Length: 400
Length: 178
Picture (cartoon, rainbow over the protein chains, first blue to last red):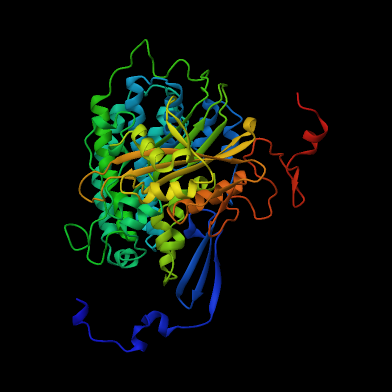
């Protein structure tokens, strides 16, 4: 209601925080070694007192030529490089690359392997979101939720270890299937974990999500509208936090996601249902809360996987026989999947030999981080860690 | 949902010769757009109500050494109407390849149409040396500013040292590969 607000004098137009502490402009170099930049990200901030007028991200400190390496090794040898990109979601990265190669070469994946892949992708989504939620609490000064999140993540890593022997860089999902079948007790242990884990989400909400200080630090901070989110090519929880209900698992189902029932959480305005007051769609809190909700949805998917898991076909096994000898046709493919951080795409161009002519990874962290320059301006200095944390970037994948 | 052929038909009537080729065999069809008209075609793809490609998903720079060319592959998508309650879908998808010279590669920037293109184009410039005309801040993004050469080109020579830091061991230099 613009006409009900009393007219303001020019001196009142200036934002109070800016007016009170107006000082000289200063360039502050935040990072590359800074605890709240989640890795080696350097942000150059142009500040005026406590206000940040401009923030320019500088990346590349972790560049390891992953794409160049892709042009020198066979696809199955490249799988271990993919889980070192987004090292918090190794399974999902393996899956994206494997799916792209399978589409290019026309390899069929055994039915049981598809279920196992979806299950591990979702388990890894929970593990990744647990890190995101926990460390976001750390950024905002809440230490305890971090310990709880990591306690549960530890159990997930034990599950991964029981299946493939690795706890972080799995290379479990490979071209044409998965490397090993599940251990005998896996279904029971996994069900046990889900029963234990599901009520814990309420604990995180009570400890952190609805915590008044946390809501005040993240609500209505770093707001990105739905139109801007699409313009900047944001994906994943960062896009859905802006109220855009777009998820590739629903929009363009890969593997067998079309068989599972689950919901796609989006950011909602504050004051309704369980959303606290002071929250607006597209702010840091919404992005954070989408991740919490996604963990609940992942639990649903995993329960359905465990229920429907088919027995292995003795003829097919668990992995395609040509997994390691596959030749890439003179053709190209681009395939995206829904990673915990957004859409991870692989562009692969073959030239008829066993080694790809070009491998390009479209990392969700890389694409989401480019909005920082837009979202991190004309805000308080203390908002910058809140905004960066709510993007949940993994620098290993930004720099590749 | 429009098919690839229908989209290409609209583009051909609109731009004629500028749509140099449409490749439909293979696992993902793509159109080849002439580098001179790419700026106009991109604007049409973004703004025309029949096209309305609002998502720029990826730009992949590729080296076509045997043809002595460089190219960029643009992956575009058109979302259904923005909704917070109904699951949205990808209505249309289109892959466009724009081929440019190897010696003096120039492609029109699309960063003013899709903000997402900003970093993708910087990466393509950094890795493949393609100059995007009209880009607001075309600087290296992953490599240091003083890096020499474009690492993802097929004829790239790996440097043996960087600011006095050896990139290879003495052993590798003195003993031939076996």
